[in-house]
Figure (cartoon, protein in one colour):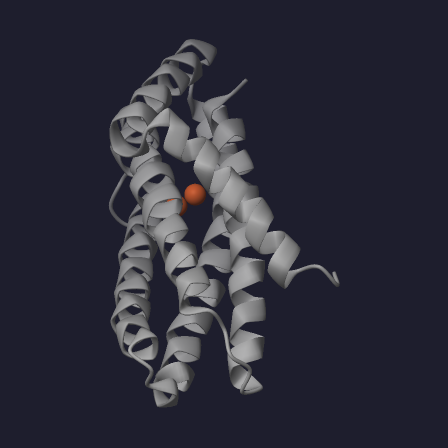
Amino acid sequence: MRSTEQLKEEHEAIKLMLRILDRVCEKLESGEEVNPEDIYQILEFIKNFADKCHHEKEEDLLFPAMEEAGIPKEGGPISVMLMEHNTGRDHVRGMSEVLAEYKAGNRKVSSKLVENARNYITLLTQHIDKEDNVLYPIADKCLSEGKQEELLEKFEFIEREKIGICKHEEFHKLLHHLKAVYLKDS
Ligand SMILES: [Fe+2]
Ligand SMILES: [Fe+2]
């Protein structure tokens, strides 16, 4: 297995959570009540699974390996990806701040919550598309098989250190639970 294949699998999990978040936005827009705890869990998934685990595998391991192989960091796709990770973090911070108010019973903030969430969904959907179709194919071309294997081993270390193997399974369970609740008609 290539390291980029594992990252692509993680993209599929993240995209599923984005679909769930989109459904949450639709409910909020139509004035329906959404359990704040579900939104909190979605944000926990995004902060830990998508950002702490997935984005750090890219930032700390894949991108540096690509640089080492001669792909320049500045002025190329890697710098765009890094910028987008940071913009995503701003949107997530925005969602967390507004969620605290929503949780406290202030339903007037739901439009702000939706705005931040939709910005995040749009950004990350395009980001994942660029990585799957542009960046990872470049990585596959410039990284040797040995390097790809080494990256996979180091990914495991990040998973253990950053979120813990058990937590990883818990996130997949959460994903399936929320899918059953929010995407049951699709
Ligand atoms: Fe990324
Ligand atoms: Fe990614």
